[in-house]
Length: 83
Image (tube, rainbow, N blue to C red; front, top):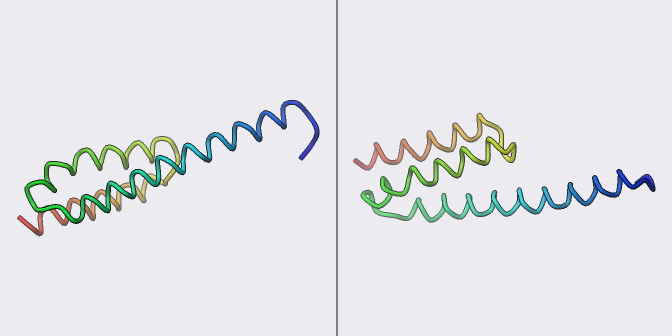
């Protein structure tokens, strides 16, 4: 690492962003895991909230937009298969 003020600041910012991204990613993964064990009616009720969390991850650049699409598609498929 270069010994410049701007470089040191960039390292601090990157660490903050990494921690924040890890937090949001883990929270979303936990929400998906919790969603999968719910009954059909509760599942359909919670699905929009989890889909919103996935969209926010893609918007922030934590996950790729295609991965977000695939995750939401799989979760929606479970809703229609159970109904």
